[in-house]
Image (cartoon, rainbow over all chains, first blue to last red; front, side, top):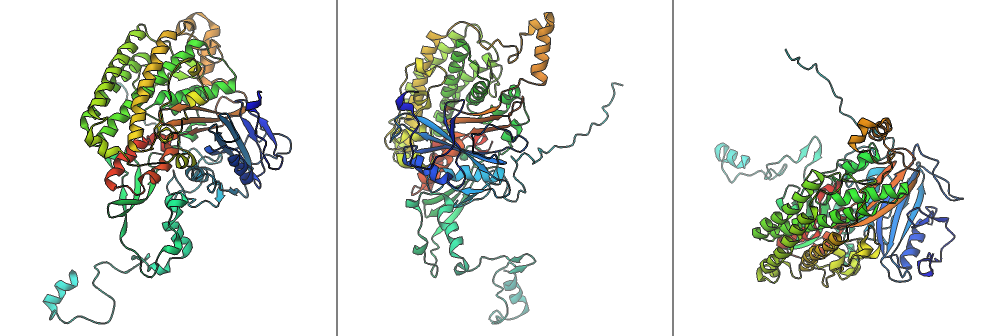
Length: 172
Length: 463
C-alpha cells in the first residue's frame, strides 16, 4: 500500500476496521457513533454518498466480522466516495457497515450530511423497515403507501400465484 | 345547481333560507367517512406544515421555505400543485411528478416513483448466479449490457477469478457500443421532448445500427444475457470488425449532422441554454453521477478515476461542462459518443486473440459438442444449469460507469449458489433526486426538457 492510498486517519473513536476483498476500507461503527463516523469522513474529503442500502442477515448469522462487533439481524451498508479532493488525494471508497438490531431498528439519518441520502434511506425503510431518525419524509418510496410489511426482509414471502394445471385436451 | 332548479319550480327565487347548512355546494359535506372538505389552514400544526412546505419536496435548505415566513392567517393561494404523469409521454416511462407552480414557474417538485417496481432485488435472491444476469439486464433496459457487466464483475470478484484478455476486451467493446446506443436513444427522446422530431428519427435510426450488431452478436436486440459471470456467452461473430467499422463510420458522419441540426441552432439553444441549472456542490451533495455531475464541471468518470476492465489501456477524454444546464448535458452526451467511438477504434486495434471465457468447467458450461462425447462434460453442464456454481462467502461492491452514471452492484454471498443479497445502485434512481433542484425556478414548459436531460430509465429507478 503506497502512502497516498493509506486510510485517512480520523479524529473519531477507534472503530473496528478491515479491508474488503474488493480493496475498499471497511468500518464497523456502533450505530450510536455511526453518524459521527460518517460526519468525520465527510470532513476528511469523502464528499459523496455513493450508496446506502441494507441487508437482512436472518438465516446467515455467521458472517465475518472483526472482533468487538456483535452481529445483529440487519446491517446498514453505506458506501462513501472521495472524488479526489480534500485530505483524500485519490479516488477512494470506504464502506461503513452498521449493525442494526431487529427489535429497535432505528439509526440516525444521514440527510443532514448528504442530501442524496433522502431517496436511499427511504428505500431502505421501505424494503427493510429500518427507520431513520431525522429524515424529513420517511415514507414508502417503491411500494404502495398502504403496503404491509417490508418486502426485502428474509421472512417476507416471495409470493406465488397458485398454478392450476387443467387437464390439457388430448390430441383426439 | 339542483337547489336553484328546485327554487324556480317550488317558490320565489328571492326566498333563500338563512339558517341550516350551506347548500351552495352540490357535494355532501359529511359522509360516513368524515368530512370531505379541506380543513381550515390554521388547523395545520407546524410539524405538518413543515412536511407540507419544507423539506418534503426535497430541496436543499437554501431553497427551502422558512415556516415562520408563511402567513397562516392569510394563506397565499397563488401557488397550485399539479400532477404530471405517470402516463405522460414525456416522462420517459411511469414517472409521476407533483409540481408546485406559481403561475408558470415551478417551485417545488416531488418525483413519485414505484409504478414499475417488480422486486428485482428480491427475485435475484431466488436465482442462481448463472441466472442472475437475465434478471439484472432488465433493469436499465437502455443499457442492459452494463447491468450484466456490473453483476458479472461483482460475482467474479467474489469468486476471485481472472478473466482472459479477450473476454475483457469483448466486454469493453460491448460496453462502449452500448454507451453509443444509449446516448443515441437519449438524443432521440430529448429531441422529441424539445420538439425536434427529426432528431428522434435520426437517433433511432443510428441506434438501430448498433442494436443490429447486438442482435448478430448476442441473439437479441435488448436484454441480452450475453455478459455472464466467467466471461461472455459466446465469441464475437465472424467479420465483427467490419460491422463495427460500419457503425463507427456511420455514427461519426452523422454526429456532424446532429451538430448541424441541433448544436448552435437558435431554437434549440433557446430551449436548453441556461435551463435546469445545477451547481457542482449541489450535484455532489445529491449524489448525482454521470453526465449530470460532469455537466457541472466535475471531471468524474469511473472509467478514468477507478478504471475497470482495460480502460487503463485506451485513450479517451472525460467531457465536462461548465454551467450544469440542459445544454451542457446535451453537449456532454453527444461528445461522449465521440469519445466512445474513439475507444472503439482502439478496441478494434487491440482486440487480443484467445478465449472469451474462463475455461473452468465449474463456472462456465462446456461447449455443446463436448456433451455428446464426455460424461464429465455432461455432469458439469447438468450441475451448472441445475444447481449453479457456489460462490465463496463474502460481500463486495463493484461500480462501473454506465451511460447514466455510477452503476454499482453490492453482492453478499453466504456460500451457496444464489446471492444472499443483491443490491443495484441504480444511477437513474439517485439522479432523479437532483430533478427538483434543476426545475426549481424554471418554467413548467421547460420541465419536460429537464426531465429528459436527467435521462431516467424507470426500469432502473423502480427495479
